[in-house]
Structure formats: C-alpha cells, structure tokens
Image (spheres, rainbow over the protein chains, first blue to last red):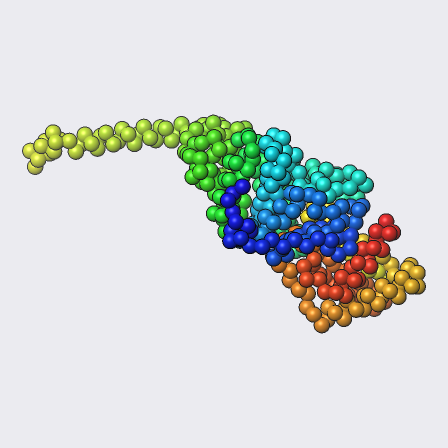
Length: 297
Length: 103
C-alpha cells in the first residue's frame, strides 16, 4: 500500500503468537511481535478473526519504527489512532471497499452473540460501538469538547490512549469520506507521510498541522485533499494553524466561516495598502524624483 | 478475607475504564476451592517479593490488580500481559475462571 518493506522498512520478520493463555480476551503488540487470545466465548471470541485487529497490532510496530509516539495522553492516543486507521485501511484494501462502503469498525468480528456490541471501536462514530448492561457505553469522544482527562496510570488507560483516539479517528474518517474513492490512496498516504514526519511527543494539534502540510506537499497548495484535511480537523474541534494557502473561507464550515471570511477581507485590505505604499516608494525613487531631489540640494 | 480483581487497558480498554473490580469473599468458598486459592495466592505473593513487577514494553497490554484485604493481611499484586510471572498468571487464571463461573 505504501511501499514499506515490513514493519521496520528493512524486511523484518513478523512474529505472531496465537492461542495465548486461557480464554484470553485481548490482542497486543509486545515490542517484538503480535499476541492474540482466543477470547472466553462470552465477552469476545478469537481475536485473529478480525483482520483490522491483526493490522492494528502490526501498525503499532510501524509506529514504533517511525514516530515512536509515546504511549500516554495525546501522543499515545495518536499511537492508538494510527493503528485503528491503518488497521481499517488493511481491511478495506482486502475487501476492495471505497470509503463510503467501509464499516469503519475495529474488531467487529471478535464480538459474540451473547453481548449486544457492534465492535471495539468505530472511526465513523466514536462512542457508539457498544452500549449494553455488561460493558456500559463506549466512552470514546468524537470531538475535543468531549476530550477525557485521565491519569497516566494503567487504570486510566495511560491517559486515555484507547479513549481519546476517537478524535483523530473521526478526523481521518472525515478526510477519507470527503475525498472519496479508496481511503488508502489519498487520505491514507497523507496519514502515513504525517506519521513519518511526527516524533515521540507529537500532540493532536501538531499532528493536525502536519497533515495539512503533508497534504500540500503531496497534492498541492489549496488542493481538494488539503482542504478536506483542514475541514476535518475543524469539525473535530482542532483548528490547524497551517491554513491552506487558497480559498480559506470556503475550506471552513459552521460558525468559523464568518471569522475566516472577515480575516480574508482584512488580509485583502492590508495587501491593497501594501501595494499602494509600494507604488509610492517606487514613485519617490524614479529618475525624475531623483533629479528633483539633487537640484534641491 | 476479600480478594478483588481489577482489569484495565487492552483492546477493550473502553469497556474496563468504568468497570468496578470483581470481588470474592474467601470464607464463602468451599474448603477445597479456598485451599487452592490461598495456595496460589501465597505463591504469587512470594514471587512478587523475589521479583519486582516487570515493565512490559508494547501496546494494548492489559493490566491486572489483585488486592487482598482482611485477616490482618493486605497485599496488592499488579502485573500486565507482557512477561507475566508464572505464579501470578496461575492466580489470575483461577480468579478469572471463578468469576466467569459465578456471574
């Protein structure tokens, strides 16, 4: 998909361990390979049944060898989001689905009939993957207004890495569906470029800015792709500070349209003043003015 | 004596975030079950004294906190999925099987 030669881009062997433990309700990346449980048959079933979960774990390896996003708070939530995004893209690629056709669910295949649950997470609608008496309601936010401040402890999910990942997940879904077609082509490429341009401490805001920059690099300033990226982050409550270099006001929807429309007018007015001043200065420096000035001395 | 098991993190972190710990009262167990549980508990506690908790590297690891209170005993044992010591794993298996069978 992105012409990467295995997890480390050097042909690294992929190790996967299955049937871990007894009734193990989880899958994880242990720093060297992937580990999958069979589930207890009540809460979850075999985690290898879900291609997006498998790809999610593999993607943790890719993140480790690229940005190496620290696994706590926002950088950790980005780490988790990368795995959900690329996990979903692998499933979509295998099914040859467009962004509109995809279900955008993570782990739909590991649920059991015993519990009413769509999936572990939803990129399309964070916070709706499950809601039942046994598990409670999916706590993922879809907007910065619902960002959950959790402690950096195991009990706090390391500052909510699996929780607040809902926000960048939603942003990616919005970019992919706004652009249309296969999500791995444009949106996925922008996200992969941005992952490689990020660092261990990258936060949501910085990543949003990076995606706008990377979209411009790959598709051009003011491109449809860049505008989709800018618009998506605004919709989840993050305003990129890297503004697309053309059509600023038209790239924004909702209440911010007035603010950016006003800003555009101010910039235009300032530009006109600069042009007028430039003409004045040029006029002062013309040969005719220079002679006049010499005579007066 | 009460023994509680709190689970967090992992792929289902959203499920465990607000889930209270599971609790059992040792005195309510049948004699055989009680003996088996206490044997595993003693082994895990001894193991914890001889080995510090190992920091697991990786992502989507679940963490387990086993808390023992009562009978002049207060013990907290904590491990995660990666590099889980043997005695803790056996205690965890027993507790999880017990809670599944006694929902």
